[in-house]
Image (cartoon, rainbow, N blue to C red; front, side, top):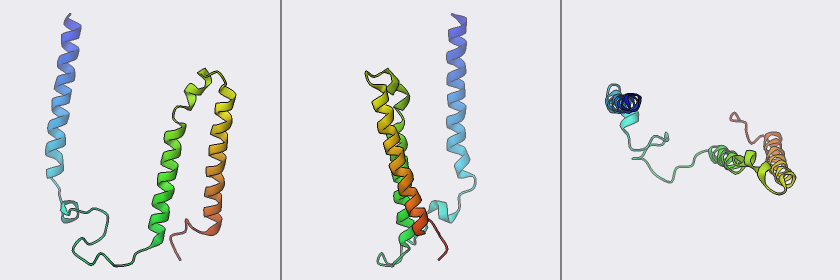
Length: 116
């Protein structure tokens, strides 16, 4: 019984300390960039019609694509418990191969180069 009370007390104390630190720490060194409503690097008061680099969108889409790929392949370790685990691993290999070929294509086309 004492171990349970000690564990709960320790968990509550640690939670309280971390919550207080998370509320107190960000207020110590806030700057104008952090206080602006947009942290994306664009001026929110300027014109919304200014052109900017298309490479930004290319890298963002590549990031989302590989992030989605990780989310799709996350349950793969449990695929060996299915009736046909070999088919699961074949489909995972196909997905990874297609994404790897797409990344190689983007790399060879120069889509990942920041300097022009």
